[in-house]
Amino acid sequence: MNGFGLSPQLKSYPAGRSITELEAVQFLNGCKDPSAKSGAFFYLREPDFLGTVPEAWRADFATESEEAKVRMADLKERLEKHEGLASVGRYTCQWGGVAQGRPYVKGLEEFGARVLRDLWESLCHHFLQGDGPKVNGELKEPEENILQESFQELQQKRFCARTKLLQATAAQLRGGSICVVSGECGQGKTVFLAALAQELRAKAPRHGDPAPLYHIVAHFTRARPDQASVQVMLGRLCALLRKQLKQPPAPPTSYRGLVAQFSALLHSVAQSLKRRQSLVVLIDGADLIHAAGGQLVSDWLPERLPQRVSLIISVSEESALLSSLKRRKDVTVISLGPLDPPDRVVMVRKDLALYGKKLEESPFNNQMRLVLLKRGSKQPLYLMLLTQDLRLFALYEKLSERIQKLPVSLPLLLQHLLGCLEQDHGLELVAIALVSLWASRDGLTERDLYGILATWKELSGADIDLEEAIHAGRRAGGYPMAPFFDFLRSLRGLLRACGSPAEPPGSRLHLYGTPLRTAVEKRYLRKPGLDRTAHVLLAGNLQVLLWNGMYVSCITPALSCGVS
Image (cartoon, rainbow, N blue to C red; front, top):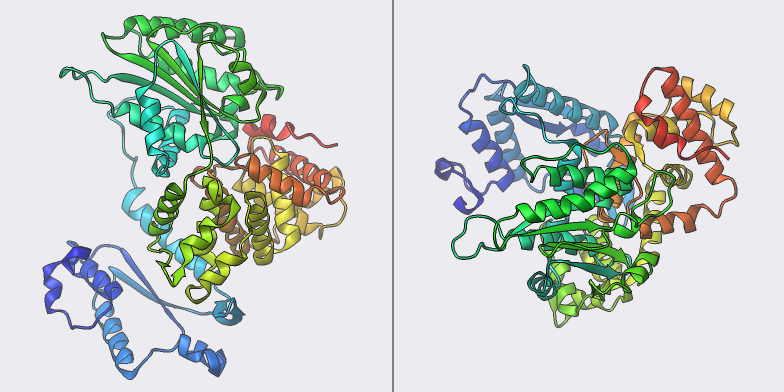
């Protein structure tokens, strides 16, 4: 038990108890302040629920034996001794039926709201009282840098394949040149660049010199929709490069000024580096960088790099930028091809192990082989989506059958996952939500999405014009929060599986990556008028927010999807 972090004092605890019970009791016994406000919450189901369960399924919910009943009663008695520190309450629920061969309950909305309220009050009490922490009196790190660093860390943690290619790329890096990492959508270019940045940072200094071998400046255009703006990208890179200089120049005020300063800063920083040091600039998704009007631009690329500066960028295989770069003499192209079978196995094992799951690989039941036979298993994104489906929806007894039934390619798998969303939350609601995300260039906040769906429900899904959307939006409020947050949880799960960073509540939701956007277009834009409905709802929601004096900062993003 000590291997699980349980204290020696539990050796005297009655034998045969569950790990969950032992952990709970250890927390309660180990609290230094017994009078502290509740730090543990226990919710017990109302006993009359069992009377609503059909006899055939009652064993799945009832205690398995008389001995188990005695243990539960003993645990309740122990919890009552810690009144104040431990909050013990009851919740109600209803028999829901059977899905995928397993029983489930419903009517948990009130229970979910209560858990959320209890946890929030506890967090406020323990961490959010007072003036809040100060960071040594210094200015906080810019939001964009925090976003970029967290995104890079998330992507780097997903890296587990192509290790030899990564090491070879780092070893062959040469100053004064551009390294282009190319590949099809879903081949893991972003993850590869994040891992390459970490690999270069970890390079040991030479001859005992404590100074790092490489100075890394990285920018990921997929971290958030606005990060693909050329002015956002150049503005951030120039700010990071200016920090490397003792006497930095003033920030430019125009786009042309940014382009000129970016090139000049590369030369200035190169001259300021110590002996044997190099500067490496990594830009993921360089073919997605666009101007304010939405047109793709590449005139920011330096015509010539200093000898101690390397530029590493990633582009999609079919991009026009790749064709242009191949004509330059200072460019080396590294193509990310299909994953090798050993790398696929490692990736599946790692993704499932994060959630304590694994596939059978025995000669008589080789579930891993069933995965590798899928045509799409050569793509990292396909494997990420497949493992999410298996861990969330598959039953252990029917796992092999589930794997066999899953679509064989990435586009078909995305269509399958969208169908699962529709099955759980309704086709029309999912369609309106995803098409609204598709129509909004810079994504939507949770509040935006709720307002759009509430307005749509207020109008009962009928054909609408802008004036109707505005009036309905001002009186909308009939969409319960519990089912909305349930849908939001499922939606965020899909977005994260497609590579979207796990951003905090209130941040923008957006369709991350070309494959997901393409899947939404193929599935929902075939219905005539749906895209116009989404544009009308977006415009109506914006107008309501402006009339309420809220969210003025969203004018530009929201207006980027005008009503047709």
